Image 1 (cartoon, rainbow, N blue to C red):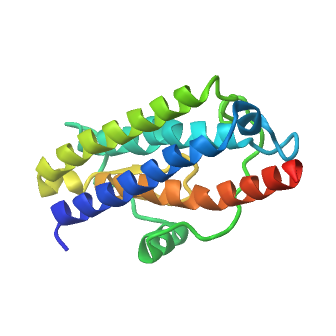
Image 2 (cartoon, one colour):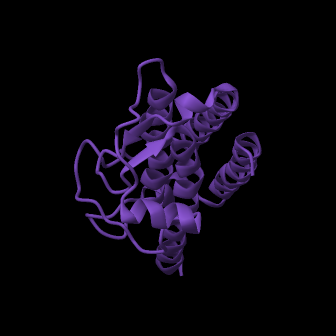
Length: 188
């Protein structure tokens, strides 16, 4: 599959999952979006904010870094074993990933459902902008890589960072299922 077809496929899947997240918001009131299963777990609203935040401030930022003149590195190394596994499977492993509570990493509670829709739309719009850029860059710039901040996946190129966004949204559907089950128990 050539690069442009792959990017177009990623965008189609990303649009579908973004639309799913937005449509699902109709099912909740703001109080439910704020409800947390425990003090050290995120609410559904926090998870919703995490998705566009990481898209805009991590994955797409690193994709842009790889594409920028003088950005990224051809000597950044390769993927870790976990990075290879994720891209071979086309998804994150179906396991729960917990990060320590940290003011820098833990999203705030959302102010409104409209805020969540706007943030998801901003990420969707940015994905399309970056997708267009990726389709026009030369193969030399596609060799440049940026290292995952937590080194979990190793060094990824711009297309891989771009693909990571859709995989990340899909992975959080598992968390959404757990939070939906929690909310069902609370209301039942």
